[in-house]
Image 1 (cartoon, rainbow, N blue to C red):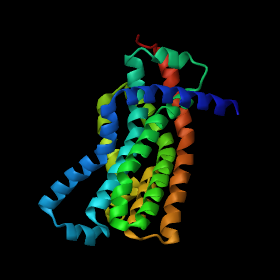
Image 2 (cartoon, helix red, strand yellow):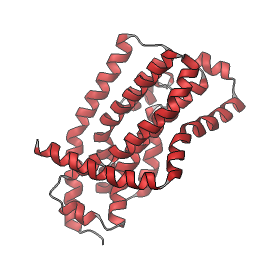
Image 3 (cartoon, rainbow, N blue to C red):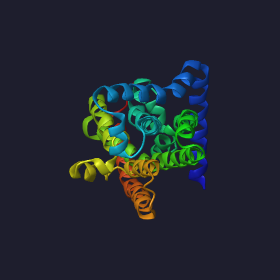
Image 4 (tube, rainbow, N blue to C red):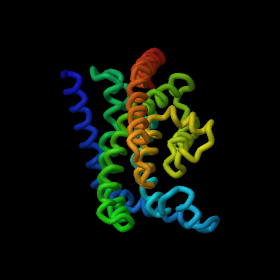
Length: 272
């Protein structure tokens, strides 16, 4: 109960920080609302220039605009987790905050797990505002149900991704220092393997196996199966169980890597 109380306090503090910054800059509100449409428009212009929308619908099983809007929403929400967790240690050190993080009685793990929650909630809320109209236009009342399912699965994908993202992010710092180049390479690779814009069941076998190691990839697959109407119990239940199991499986690694990173920082000292 004590740890839950500490975690709640950390989330509350992060929300004050993020929301104060966010609502002070109105342009960010517009960007959050427009980003799924902008990315979808770019993908449609590029896709229509090299292929037929009819072929896309036959290949994937759903109209391109709806599929890409949902994919953009998922990408937007997942990026909130990846960016906040992987880049925050560098930001903390460069801004001089890291000594206070390390000297705090609160667990380093709780600190970094609490970081992406505020921006993720904004991504979910404002992304849903862009997702709902398109879903309703293409699927009517069923589109409302689909949107709610997508939002719920995006929340699950974020929850199961936090252990792996934290372990990978802090692990890079343990093995190679604050190497922003490695993070810049790893970040897009993760987003490709998650399969936001390319269904996993169309991937080659090696890529499919590799993407299976990423918990959110299974949630994204379920979302795409819901979109195309492939909602058999086994096709939905198995990926969700795998995503949850992987999230639990990576949790001990997150704790171990976090402890190694904290020990490394305490030994070498912190730049101020």
